Image 1 (cartoon, rainbow, N blue to C red):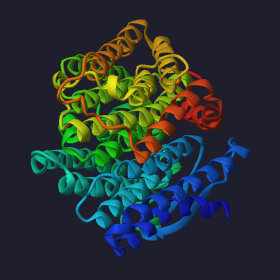
Image 2: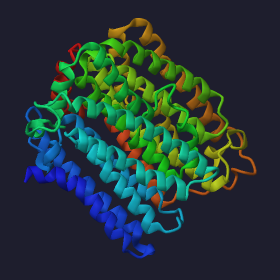
Image 3: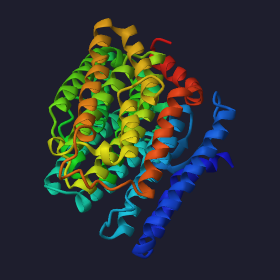
Length: 499
């Protein structure tokens, strides 16, 4: 029973996506939403099962797949995976519901691609076989590329090609690292009968990585770090992100920012840190410096943005830079804070991009200079926007505060100076987010904003639960932190970090 839960979480969105391809366009969005709600219910059930035994989780399935090269279909859920699976299952219904007012051409294909991406993302977060992890990693790229290309705006062909090339090149580095590590698993030489002793199982790869000398581990570190850094993205591998976020349809932007970038931060925790501990210790300073530079750089760029959606895109780079820096401190606070901030950022950024879409749909602009006074005509929207914004700037008693406090605490244990610069994300974030709110919502109405229509039922159905989650997770984050704690301690123990 329990081993089928993991398989169900992966297979159900895929089966629903296949059903959508044979569904009439009118009912596609409703079927997709219903499927995503069922998937969320299954994720909550998995959470309840895992909570009963978080120390020794039993939610796993491990069956042979490609025996000749030692590949198994090995998927499992521990506390770390559970948080990411839960986040994915939580956000996809909001993403689908937020698209109800949009008249997408060929909606059956559009929503089918969203569910296929959910399947791939769940696979990434549960894969315990390196080959399987790589397969799901690449699968996640395909549907989002089509979503951005077919339903995006502006110069989407050029922008999505750049995004595809960036992420594909990073993935190839990771594949090379996996193949190299694979040679050090099992026993025997290639071409002998003992070749089948080699394995892509995560524990076998951990052991192979630990057996390498520091120089070899350093090369493997960069092979994996490049793939993860591009996906997050971390400075200076971020140049694909702002244009892609702006050109993508809102649902695509939400998928990219709310969930897909978590593939990179999850990869750091699950794969990179325990895979090559000596390589991590040798290069962690460089990784933290790049992450902190990204925080300051992206925050400064966000301050001068004139387009609301592009501003939110740069703010995402700043937030993920803080997560990356915290994870590389190898402290319990840093990794726990990273996980909490991944949850919080996913919820906040989906809310922010949806708010930008609501404003665009009513005013036909996202230019800050052309907006203003929306609070005067739609005060309810102003309140919801403000709460989501405060969660993004980490106000105490919001979800953002928990993660950022733990992250800065972890970074402070590593270096006071690094914590000082990393902490700028709070100050600079408050500057650009509050200034954007002031320009959009406050002041006098103008010809663009005077006729701002009230929120619809579907819009409230997205924003109000997001606001409730921001407050609830800020007030009581304990269940999520407790379920992840045993797995975090295990990662730190393997990576040789500070408990």
